[in-house]
Structure formats: C-alpha cells, structure tokens
Image (cartoon, rainbow, N blue to C red):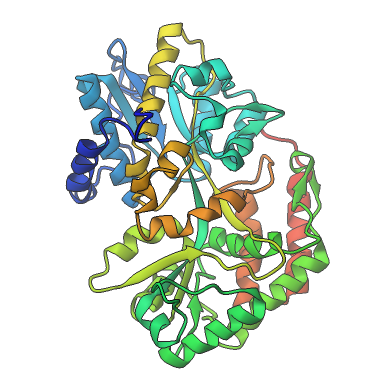
Length: 455
C-alpha cells in the first residue's frame, strides 16, 4: 500500500480494468450458483480433480452486482500472481445454505483457505471452533494491524476477546431518495443534498411533503417477501431509542428485548402504512420502483441496492444515512469479512492466504464503488473515496452501525431474521397488532434460545 497517498500503488489501472469489465462480468453470469470451482476442495471431492501447488482456495456468497464486481477483483488477483491457477473460487447461495457448507467442509477437514462470512455469522463459527483466530501476528502477514480498521467493525469481529475475522466493509441500512421529488417537496438543502431530517415529527412531515408531490407515497420499503429488510427497519429504530435492551443475550440463550419499547416502535411504524405515507403491501422490486418512478420520494434498504438504482436510465437519486428519529443515531448493519476456516496450515500456506486477503483489501475502493463502506481506514480517509458520490454521503453510518446480537440462530439471512421479520411484516401490512407480534416473536425466539447450538 502507498502510505503517502493512502491508496494502493496499483489502484488507478486496476479500477479502470474493473469499471470496464463489470457489466461484461454480470452479463456472463459469473456470479450465478457455483463459479470457477473446478479445482476447489469441493470439486476435488466430487470429481477427483487436484489443486495446483500454491493455489489459494476461496469461497464466497456474492451474487448480483457484488458478485460481478468480485469476479473482476479475483481476476486482478490472478493477473498479479501471473497464473490462472493461483486462485480457485466458488460462489454459493447466500444465507443459511452457505454457512452450512462452510461448517460441514471444515468439520470434514476440507475447507477453503479463505472464506467470506458476515460478522454476525462469524461469531457462531468461532464459537463452534471452526475458525482460526486472527492474531496480530497473522494480521501482520498482510501488513496490517487492528488500528487499520474501523473500530466498530473490528470489535464486531471478536468472540470472547479474540478476533476471528478481517472486516472488508460495513453495509448499513440507508435512505435512497428521488432528487426531483425531494426538490419539488422542498426537502433539499442549498448543496443539493437531502436536508437533515430529525425526529419522528420531522420524518412524518417530510413524508407528507413528498406525498403532496407524488400523489401516492412519501417512502417505500419492502414489507412482503423480505423478512431481513423488515428486521433491519425495526432494529434501526429500536436501537435509536433510550432504554433499549439487547434483543438477545448470553450468546442467544436469553431473549431480553424490551417488550414495551418494541411494541411502541412497531406501533409508530404501523401508523406510517396505516396513514398511507408508506405502502402497506409491497416487495423489494415494487418498493424501489415506486421511488425510481417518482411515486415515492424515499426508498429504504441496504446500500447495496445502489447498483440497481444506477442502472435506471434518467434517474437522479441520492443516498443518506437513515435519519435519527429518536435519541441516538443508529443504523442496522453487517460487515462482509474474510475468515480462515480451521485447518492445518504450513507457514507458506498461511502467508498465501493472507496475501490474498491483502490483495482484496487493496481493492477496497473498487469494492466501495458498489456501495459498501470500506473498513480499511486508509481507503475510507482517501480523497478518492471521500469524492465518491453518493457512496461517501452515508459513510458516517459506519460509526454508529448496530449489529445483530450473537447467537447460533441470529445474523444475516438467519432464522432470527425470518422469525422477527415475518411478524414485523404482518404489522406493517395491518394484519396483526404490535402487541400480538411482540408476543409471537418472544415465544418463537425463546424456542431457539432453549435449543442447543447444533454445531
């Protein structure tokens, strides 16, 4: 890395390569299903293929725009190494299926050298003894130390005081906005960006002003077919409130959320759909289309939807952190991270694995162009990232990101999100009361809390 500029020496030429090839990679379907797995441990077990000496094996769960971008980063790594055989990568379905594959492969002593994991899922893998600790000496093999990362993400990488993951990004729940609608509604500041929205009353006033322009809705977010998004919505607001308690404690063995506070938060959320400020029954494609077509000013989702918004011809949109409606700033988030599944590694094998991680982190700016906030501070603080819009306009959310409480059944794409998100969706659709939803959430989560970790 270039300590003078805060950017990798190879950055400009590499980014040109990535920008030029991103659309082509997506068109070739490089991220669909299993990608480039012929020489991985998985394929070796299935068809008897052998890995070339010195090959790094890598598993990930990236699809869509993230997957296409990653494939080009992997090709750049191969180019740097001067050999197509230097890396064998496999892409699997996001969520529980992926983590099951990583767990079983590690238990069977056939894991990849490096894998991607959400920080909210890495802690469970660490608790099960399936990950190698990331000590300072291991991190130094990539020329890094803990101080080189966003500390909120770094703290989330720890289990019982030891780090087990190297965070690649922070990806928070954010606010997308239609510039034309917001301008007509008087919601933009002198700089042309969204003016600050503060408090529940300020949020509702903004939605009403936008609704007068759109004739339909002020904001939209999925409340059908996306339980994870429903959970992110509630979690963001609940964690902004004074008096909130953890949803889960004791590594998931106790359900400890504040029933009254969750009920009150859900009641406020339900009022927005009941009053018509937000749609009552909408999935993610429909919710974003409302904003894209000017029928809603705001679209609430993860920042990774930037790729979709950028693909809409003629759409002028902006992005901002989700507003602080209560006493403290908070935004639901997770982080993609690199982990080292447990295996017997020679010093040379460990060095190759960490060299691969270093190369990927060197391309943090390329990754950030897809919406994710870089956790590597030299990239985050660089002039190039700070000039990247709208990505840098919500970068502050990384400093008040809130992660799921650790449990074997929690984290991104988990049973926890399915249980909570389903109940939240019913509340937003007007099909159940906040009180009933809270009671159902508690009952279902306590069943998981009373079940032993299957790992």
